[in-house]
Image 1: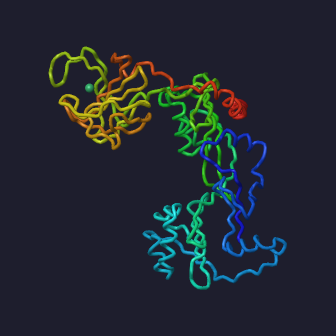
Image 2: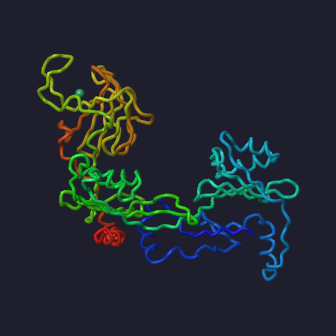
Length: 434
Ligand SMILES: [Zn+2]
């Protein structure tokens, strides 16, 4: 009988808190052996007795003492089908002379929806009985997840088996030197992937200008998870913490997720590293007209205050919500063209003008998250070329979005502070000693 070693340590992205502690003190134990007869629904990962459902249940419902002497049924060897580009389940079934009825029955179950898109190169394994009826279909979605469709008396039952990756924590350190003057170079020298370097940069983006402020001797260290299954490396997991010493000032970022699932990076005291607003709501642009209350208007040729910032960018460049908030206007008028107004809490309002179009789902009343695409750069309304005109209002007063002091995002709730300190203590110690 096939045996799948499965532990119940289900890895949710960012379950770092408990995991780290668990991991440090013990490797995943053999908590895998759930009762075979009554698999409970508490976890997705169940050791399903593959291939032999019927004999298995008969054996256990009769005399358990005789299990070992149950005769093994003789089955044809399973069909292993390598998925080719352009394959779908229908043509795979047709090509291999498999039952279209079984195909329908399998596809009518909810988890099998994932079979609508097959990954070329992966393998589907199909077990049939001697009458040609499919008894089991097994599809490995990725190294961590397998779909199993198993025949039952009434059709098929499908479920996912999640293989828990083994998690290791890795500490890496780097230094800005003459040879590695940028974060990218120093990160590469420290053995970081491009992705981790980006994450590190985005963690401290509010506090460190990596383009302007780096100096020789600046140092960083970080701790992150690496995941493997059966010894095979499947990538990095959560970045759990990082420290950056820039111009002799130490910045610390600690990952935390609370019981409600809210997560983020915080400093030692539980303050968010994030600001409530991003400075520039459009990437890939340059400031073509600054905030200026005495500007001569380019079209009207008279002094008209410019109460915002113009970002010149290609038509269609995504425009991002500067902060979490709610859409209070998404409409069009002669001067502003297509424009969006967002309300952020009680005090803050941001405005985005001259859009070529709104992003789908942007409607008055809808919530948006910081960095979410709300529209696209255009030249609608009074505009001489494609650009975003962006305004930032505090208590109804226009402020310069480039220089206004941005409020911090919410800190750790006081009710979570104790849990935060416990969860991040060992990470902090590792960062401090590295
Ligand atoms: Zn403007």
